[in-house]
Length: 340
Image (cartoon, rainbow, N blue to C red):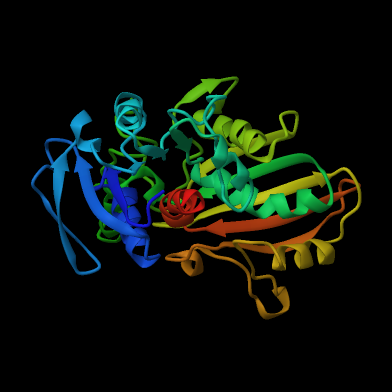
């Protein structure tokens, strides 16, 4: 691949799309040209990132002529329609939707975990679900030392994962609650749902639609994606996903069972050396990961590392990350960096 690279960002006006552009510039990605693509509603709109002005163009198949990398963050339907069009025109697609993640011919990549998978791409590489990314970044270093047997995950997922409209709604609901006004809800659990719930001062135990056996799609994603990324198709994984009234930064309470004994101290030392991980685990000084501290950071923060005395080889961990950066934008750009 040439040193100077032409890049397109699809869904450039969304929260993740804007963050992708910002991270490209921050990381000094070797850009030769940059196209910001979105729907016809956003075409012509000016967009400023890091003091640089860009004009948003309407997304069409011809948009990908001369593009080396196309970063997609505009939803599953757009990825399925335009991803193959980008590949036909010579671009490598790095897709942030659920469109291709479980396609056996498409690598699902977290650079700290399975970087070699990028070499197997046939034009499309999938970026995993945000919660899956931070979970496997924390667990793969431990799996490398002591095999995993079972994972129980409970997530506390920020409203930014549902988009800017949901963030704005949370802020407005907080104002209305304090001022004792009527609280309106249109975006949680998701836009277009038959019912909507207040998220301010509340928790909603649903992310994405319900699919089967009482599980919602986000929970199924975490199970299937973690198995694929870690190369452990028979790993026992279960998850409960919850939307919480936090603007940015997903959290996961992990209960992990291993095939053999691993102490909390051993796990802590392994994670301190692990790529992409920052251990914050000093309970005596009340130091542990929180969304407040992960906001704007690319690391996956791990703390509250302690034994689970209810099972023979168990540990508990608390894992926090910026879901818009490491959970989406930064991970996508790290994938492209592997290829160049």
